[in-house]
Every structure is written in C-alpha cells, then in structure tokens.
Image 1: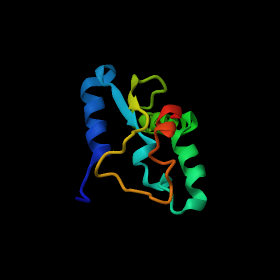
Image 2 (image 1 turned 90 degrees about the horizontal axis):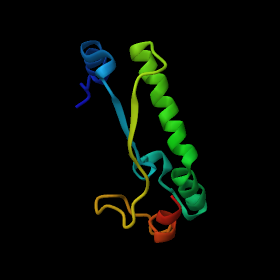
Image 3 (image 1 turned 60 degrees about the horizontal axis):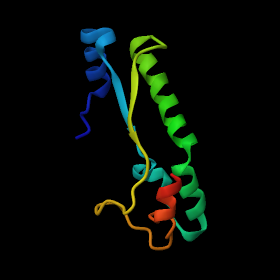
Image 4 (image 1 turned 45 degrees about the horizontal axis):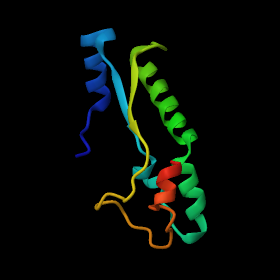
Length: 111
C-alpha cells in the first residue's frame, strides 16, 4: 500500500524483545524479478546467477548489514528459514517459454 513501515516495525520489535528477537529469512532467487530472463540470450546467465550459492550468500550479507543498521550489533541471531528453487514452478510464477532451463528438473537438481 506504499505505507509499509517495516523499519519502524523491526526497530520496535528489537527494542521490545532484544536478544530474544530472531531475524529469519527465506531466500528464493526464483522470485527475484531482477533475475527473470528477458530473452533466450540471457537465459543461462540468469538461471546460473539465481541458482548459485553466491546469490544466497549475497542476500544474507545484505540482510546482516541492514540488521546492524537497526541494532548496532554484529552478532544478532539470524536464521535462514528456506532457500532453493522450484520444479515445477508455482502456478502464479511468470513463464519463460524462451528459457526452458528456468523451470527444468535439471536446474532444480543443481540449485
């Protein structure tokens, strides 16, 4: 709605619960629109980036930095809830007929 106050919410939660507050993240490259292939030409590169462990590490490093911006701490508890890839894709996920690797079983197996 354009009025989300996430920063205020997590700041208040952390202040209330302190070290009992746990940050939890589900990292799914499959839902990152910046990694959706735009053509057959970028299909393999986008799939490779979205499914590589480097993507998950990068997202979690950014999350850690943002947590520190809220708490001032380097050691707040952070859980990785889920990460991975889907095959078959969720029914409401965009389709990329020009990129068969995107939702292939082999991609799922290597993700």
